[in-house]
Image (cartoon, rainbow, N blue to C red):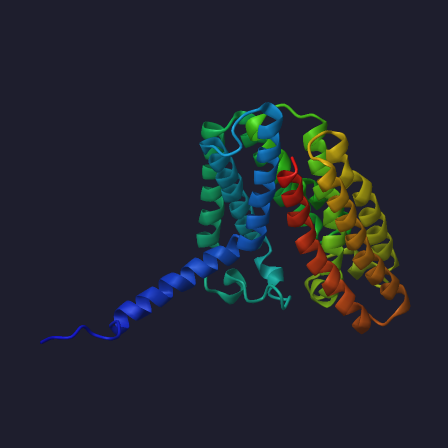
Length: 312
């Protein structure tokens, strides 16, 4: 009687490990976590537009829109890492990416970036509409052509980068209704304002990394933290009334109104604590509240959008 081998041959195991490693490298190159947030935001925009237009909330068009936007976002992330591969070496949080570590060639990354961006845009044009494809192309172009090079020149990069960063929900909306009004503008404004506390907390946490790499984020240029604190306070405060606007526009109901107010106040409290410590405490002591603000920002946006969709 024969028995099956209990383990795979060494060649098969090695091949499987290499394939898994390559998949992991692709996921890191295309910033899978960030891309998933982009896709979630696009889905929210699509869902709310579908309700507004009286069309099915779940459809093949929804799938095509979210997938196409996600593919372009992943390709844009790959091209961003290609452009920044030489400075990523100087930062602990990026030094182990596939390009700095030499696990992937620049040509390989460039091919992935070009193919996914071009393919994703063509896919959107065919399966959704030209407006979605054109807006998505413009978003990618501003991210790579303006935000990415500005990171080594001026703190204004955060402001410029907030424009493409705020577009995913608008892109999802455009896939249903290829004309823009107040509703997608409010979604854009929420994501635009949210990014400043989010990215300033990251910049404060990794200020030494950014400084070594020559990236001119606000906490690097103004190391006393006063400018960063003012922006965190201002944008998180402004986010509270803007996040309530979907109720006034009849995009969501009263449950959303109460939840958005609670989330906004809580998010502001995290930002206020960090801003206060930046001015009154040592840099080491301000690391913990910066991390807490970052964690709060990661939870805030998905919870807000989920509540908006549930109570739409």
